[in-house]
Length: 188
Image 1 (cartoon, helix red, strand yellow):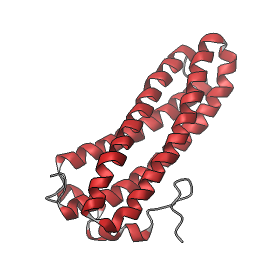
Image 2 (cartoon, rainbow, N blue to C red):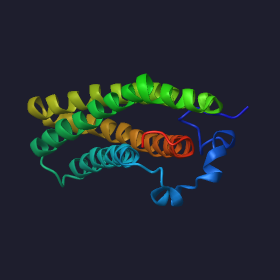
Image 3 (cartoon, rainbow, N blue to C red):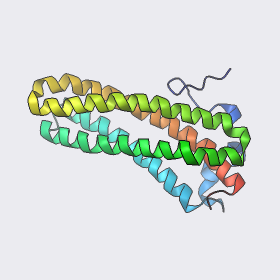
Image 4 (cartoon, rainbow, N blue to C red):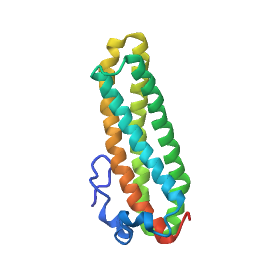
């Protein structure tokens, strides 16, 4: 049995890449069914990747004493909130509307779409840990900055975990979803 858990998955399981062979990633932008809505959806994915990297790199700057504590706390609060709120909204929309639409178009991929929904649940758990720990760091910067540094190390680890999860999940999601859309001429 193929392991489809996000934490240990190394690639999109081969049985889920059936259409990807007919619609390879490098040909998507030139495909006549590659609509603005697909570009916008993939643009949101790129934003999530950037926000994940930004929260980690800002934390590293703070830990290396290259970022002032108050500036770091403000950046962590702002960019961390953007990352968490937007991911929750995006994944909620995908689970409630987008994935059911795709499953109706091509039932062969229901298993893959279920895998992506399972990824969302795994990401929710990590985002919850990130939120709790980041909120503690932001408060500690104001109350006792010396205690904030060890907590920020934990934020850095969770942010790196989010980055890794997003890298795998978003790539797999695009490789599964975009070929379905192109093949069935959806969202044009």
